[in-house]
Length: 350
View 1: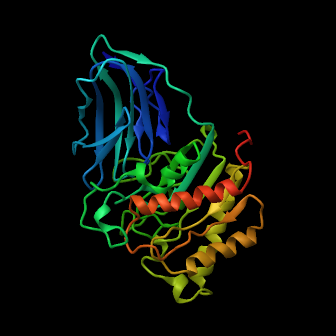
View 2 (view 1 turned 180 degrees about the vertical axis):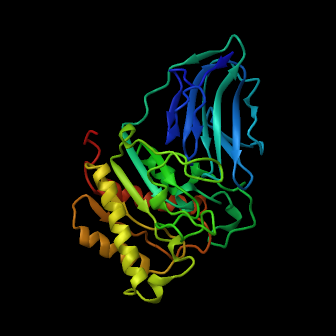
């Protein structure tokens, strides 16, 4: 039995391209499709569209997490996620572990003919969106042998958005999450690490569904489809490449321009989400404190009760490598505690 992607009992979350309802395209880390069913087996039909790295998808079946490598071509392939399952109800969440190093097209689930799809509980009413980089995506988070250390050699196998500080925070707060983030992204084009040498920054990503030109044409996102209560802007760590101008001369022209662009970026988001609260932050990944000073100065200039600057207890000096699971847990605990301290910010309707 084929469960088509447009089946009304399936549940989706994330910036997903539904231009073709029967073949939605997943781009962003943390986006997912969820199903509740009765049956002894379940598979997913998927086409992978690779840019770089070895690409993996994650799934949680009846509370147990797994992953599988995707094919390196654009042809549809069937992946078995569960077989010889016990009688009764089962729940499966199929999610994107990685950023736009690949997209995938979801062609539906496959079950045995006597299988049955069941209604799911509603998604959480609270909504959080994170604009960030690889840390917000959970890149290299599963390299548990390298906590507090440089990254090991890897090709995608350790990256898992489920263990990002952003998704852990959302789970702690019982909130739906959009991870609008990309590994290597800085704020502005021509800086950072994403798709060098002509680097693409968050200013060119934030309003897109598809945005990786090595996979296909860019496509705009409709901001009316989903509006968060809390927006976390976690940009300012990759911006030191190729030149750490903020640290070298805080008042130089490039530093002034960056602060101007950062403020303009936040103000654009504030107009798009006129009732949301904004948390400006970086992370515990090692970087010069001048970038946090720049964010703090912009926050003070904005002087808006909806805009907050947040620092972790070991901000900018917690690790020279990517954030691993235990470090992400600590970040999420601090961040969720801070968000809770803001009071009742979840009742504004958009």
